Amino acid sequence: MAIKNQVTIYFKSLSENVAIARVTAAAFAAQIDFTLNEIEEIKVAISEAISNVVIHGYTDGNGKIELTMNLYEDKLEYIVSDSGKGIADITLARQPSFSSDPERMGLGFVFMESFMDELDVKSTIDQGTTVRMAKKILVSTAH
Image 1 (spheres, rainbow, N blue to C red):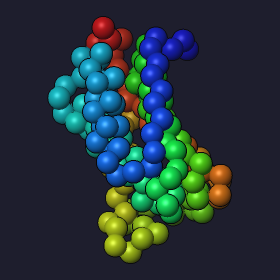
Image 2: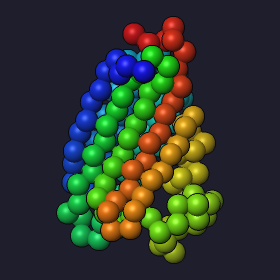
Image 3: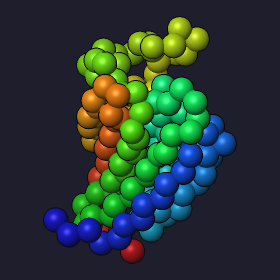
Image 4: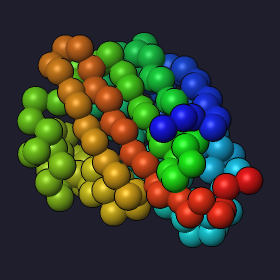
């Protein structure tokens, strides 16, 4: 399926950049006639994906995060990639309340899965993680 629009941004793995990713994701979603609630769900899912990289992906904050946003005829897709530590057990990481950091609630993947229509996670230890999320759209709602 052909991509109708695409934006890719890169930024450092810093907590300050989570808000930039949220706003950018919402602006990209605005080309679709999503409800405010749907856009808010996208923002939360993006926040969780980016926060996971900032918190778990890199130990020093010097890592790079890539956010690619694709608009297709039938869906809006967000891909968050890093070259960080990776996830040892993706199935375990996607379980509610699991976190490699005992201070965290472990709900990031739960939010991503519940707010988006598709969630795919690929990871290799010491090579990084790619999280692909998509929100389905009605063909009539795309501008």
